[in-house]
Length: 431
Ligand code: PGA
Ligand code: ZN
Image (tube, rainbow, N blue to C red):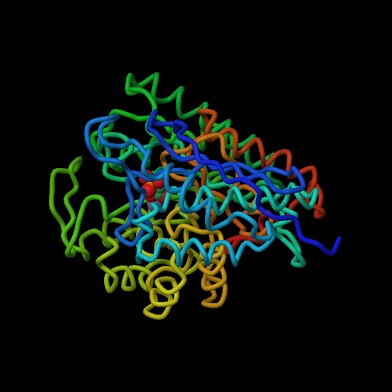
């Protein structure tokens, strides 16, 4: 086919996310009758550099309604995109950026723009008769299924600060393939639930579905997670390792951090000492945002001080921004970028962030947000763009399971087959 399919309609609508908050869905139809749809997720512990999630303010739904963002989709955005080639993702994304014309996409709304950008990719894939991951891969080889990073206990801003640390996660580093990594995580999740129930410390689940435990310290949560891995029958460290998201920007700024659970305020060096102690005592292989986003020098010192092979992830630090990733890599702050499309606002810029990470020799993890939906676009990004890891939250609640389950479907389609080189794809692989 020489003539490219074109965008015929762009429709925005208000739908609801996993926290029961309004969010933006966009549906794009092409002249040939193909269609694609995507929904914007939303963060709670957002970085200062993120694209703005445009909300109405006022009184409806606590000020969180998105009628303004939906109106920008149905008005200006639709008018700008109608008639464009559906497979010109870069051209469409550049038009949206120019149309918005603010540094943080605040005029049209980052939520309106990312939902449009992702819906366009779905429509282009449908128009070409390809699964999204295949369309995204283009001429480059797709990846195997990414290695899952899965939350077992939730804290921080997602659990009323019941513990300071936001995510206590596991990575099944020894699993031979993606389905097995999920099997082992299910074992750990079940074991953690049993341990918490037996101790009378089970309170419910946090925003991303991890257990929301009644702990008196961060270390108690770490001990619980380690015991859950042991009780699951999978060797701690070798088969199932611990990953943490400290989300330090949420409990400190200007190099001062307040540990609510431990009842003390510490400086950057004190926080680093505490975290380095955890790295020495627990099988932690990955640690995200160990310092605040405004504490770059301390972030770099921590990266240097951490044992070789530990993954140090920048989330709030770099906010999926290619220039921020290059800057932080240049000063040695972190060694891996969290990739969240809605932090930057378009798929084109998300791809630039990933390319920046690769150029700087960094690793990458494609990630969901704490406010999510049934949208599974990020799983296709992981495979199509060969991103080696995937962070989606916990192993409960369908906005999370929709992503893990989509990965199981893709595991049947990805050319590398069922046995995935998970270990060798991973920096600390022991194979
Ligand atoms: P958020 O949290 O989606 O609330 O920003 C996720 C994270 O910090 O990784
Ligand atoms: Zn984070």
